[in-house]
Each structure stands twice: as C-alpha cells, then as structure tokens.
Length: 221
Image (cartoon, rainbow, N blue to C red):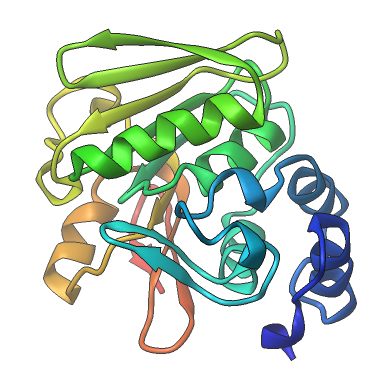
C-alpha cells in the first residue's frame, strides 16, 4: 500500500502516507506537511514532486516518500529536544529538513555528502523551503535559517564512511543516525560506533529500512 501514497500536492501525499499507515506519529505527520517535497526534487522533476516514487537526475536522487516516512518513524525522534542527528549521504536535504523541523532549535543537525553538485542542490533546496543564508568554512556549509525555531543544518563535503570517532561530535556520539547511502555490513558495523548510548540508527536493508539500537552495553538489531 505504501507505493499508493501519491498526490497532486503535498497535502494529498501526506494524507495518503497517513491513511496507509506509513506515518503514524502526529509530529512526523506535521513535519511532512511543513516540509514540501517540491522544494527538494531534482530539477526537471517538479511535476512528479508528490508522486510516491524515487526521482533521479545525475547525482541528485530522492527516494520515494514512503521510504522516508518509514525511516523518520523508525528514528523515534523526540520533538523539541537536544538530540544530535547525523545524515550520512544527506543528498537533497529533504530528510535533514524534516528532522530539523521535528527536533527544533536546540538540536544538532549534520549531513555528510560526497558530491559537490548534490551539496549545491541541497543548499538551494533548504533555502527555498525556509529562507536561509549559507556560511562556508572549508568543507563545511552551514545553513542558517531566518526563523528562530529551525536549527542550523551543517553539510560536510566528504565520505560518510570515513567519519572518525575521535573528532568533533563523533567523540560523544550521535543520538540519531540516518544512512541514505548504500553500505555493506562491515561499513554498517563501523557506523554504529558513532552512536551515543541508547542512540538509534536507521539504515538500508535488502528491501526495507532496518533499525539498529545501541545501548551502553551492546548493539542489537
């Protein structure tokens, strides 16, 4: 039923995601309504913005809405919290925007993306969604939103599989991690080491998203 969640506009798309049980939480539903997918789709695909299908143009790719709906629900986000979030393979910025909207101004929001053209698309999309300025510092682009309710989104150019546990926010770990890029089992194991105790990671499975939870003693699937 998830693939039936297409609409002629964002409202219809979210209505169907809710009707078919993809989205079940009120705060997730509200965030999907506030973050219109039309701002994030690859150029030339605007007429398909609310179709429940993946869209790709060159390196710019956005997954089907039902994939993101399931992933955001699985992240078990706490609205208006001090949660730290890492988006590996952050792509268009659609997931980062939805998470930012839910977590609020006291959260930390990081994305890692390998391709320059995708980063450019992401920055432009975030600015179209909610007015923002962009500050550049080396390989880090910080999107500063004009309102006080949305946290900065930091997009780092690099390979998300090479993040060092010994540097930056990784030292204390991230409370929530989403993997939008393809990874193998060994790489997935290494990424789980970036989680804080009790953190949640949502990553790619063979057919659906898998959730991994790490507590202070073990990692369990």
